[in-house]
Amino acid sequence: MGFTFRGTLVLVALLSAPATDVHAQASQADEHAALSISLRSFWLSLDDGRKRHAWTENLQVNYESGFTPGAVGFGFDVSPFAALKIERSGNAGNMVHVGADGHERAGRAWAYLGRYDLKLRSGATLVKLGLQQVTNPLLESADDRGLPPTFRGVALVTRFTPTLTFEAGSFDAVMARGHSELQPLTTGYGGVAFPRVSFAGGHWGPNEDGGVSVYVDRADDVWTQAYLGVVQSAGDPARARWTGKLNLYATRDQGRRLQGTIDNLAYSLSLSASRGPFSAALSYQRNLGDQFFDYIAETAGIVLANSGLSDFVAPQERSVQVKGVLDAGPLGWPGFKLTVWATRGRRADAGHGAALHAAPDSLLHTLYWKNGEPVHGGHHEFGVYPSYVVPDGRHKGTRFAFIAAAHRSSPFYADDDLREYKITIDMPSTALQ
Image (cartoon, rainbow, N blue to C red; front, side):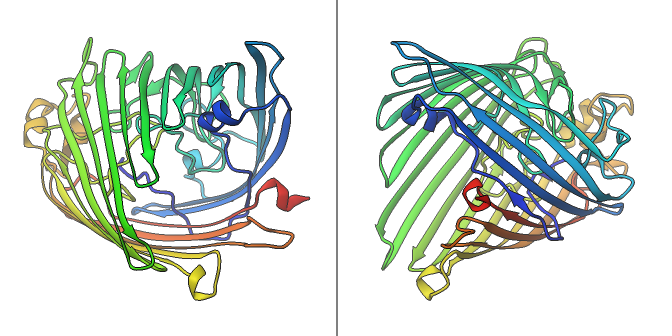
């Protein structure tokens, strides 16, 4: 339900070039074609009372054409995706290849077009039409399986000035994780299907010390959602550098209200301090609504500070997180980083939503009720995340990462107890030469 963190315990080889960002394309695109190969070996282990795991080998071949000459240049992108099942439990779900019904498909290998689009560029404006990845605080492809999800629609990004970027888009279907056929868009917690999501927004970053992001989207007949993000830093990292962040989402029901009444405000505030190789952060998060804070399925469209293995977004919930980061480069081990965190949520109270969905056949009954009572109570999680990026040599840029995280909750909280483990190895195309 709320388990959106990237986690797993076994060695994973993920040989991938960094995903192309439409912001970078708008500002740096040239007339030349580019071809890259991305390989990912993926192993994921989950234990929420029913153990499941999977290991797959995955391939992306990313071809990006240049643009035709002239005031308006045209081009296209295409990315065949393929995967091979190495080993899995019988209940691996979308860790492997599944059909529209969610059941695993037969066969050890599968392939499909995971990305294809036509694109045009005029000055600092780039437009794409087709199946593509999305990156913004409301819609970001949740790339935490063997292959990433992609969304069908149109997207535009333009850079008005070096410090001001605007983007907009509209999407009507998703190639979901583990699937090789397009699926309807749905909400993450409610599981409600809707026909289209459209968004607009932008980012203003006047300098490297701070910036503001504002976005709004509309999931037709479900909600209108707005996002505000503010970040500001000050100080010298060699002594002490302080960074404050605000993330805020406001959600209201819209149209036919397919997911019922929604009147929700969720926010997080965080303050971090860094000195040399060490940094520490303290974050407070609050959901002021009587509904779960929800976002679109197949996206990581939640940048609230405490969202991890659990999102900590039950009705009326408040949570606190402490996080520490060690960047060992200055200590003589360039490329090594260690992150540890602990989060505690409390005072969840879904009584209002439970009363509205008291009937067992109600659409959201299982969301607002747990073990025969309205969702309430507290929970906590903790995790450790070491990573290493090869700094030079033939395999420069190869990234090794391990995540181990655990979540524990009271009997009546929405999210179950969970242990999740992952090890990944990322290798850019240059390391394959």
